[in-house]
Image (cartoon, rainbow, N blue to C red):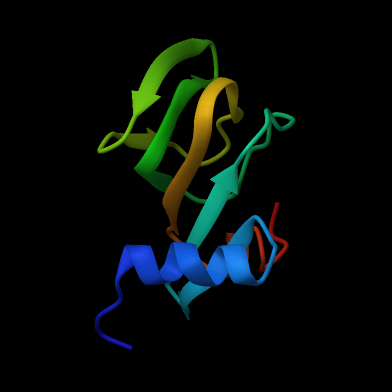
Length: 110
């Protein structure tokens, strides 16, 4: 796959009634579409991550820092940094890029 529409991915995510959808998985890279309707427990991963906020708004913790996030924002999370979304005003939908396919949420490398 070389091209994908984020609106098509969101439609597929909603049809499958899940919060996570694998978009791409290669040895050095994994991309997932994720929805955060509610706060989730803090997690840390073995690789760096980028969150591209497609829609929604709320707050994100990255270690001891707090940031407001909104559509169009990008959040970088360094490997091993605990992070979570909270105070979600509108369900957050994000493309999540993991620096390794082994460490994706669906790859269970949490």
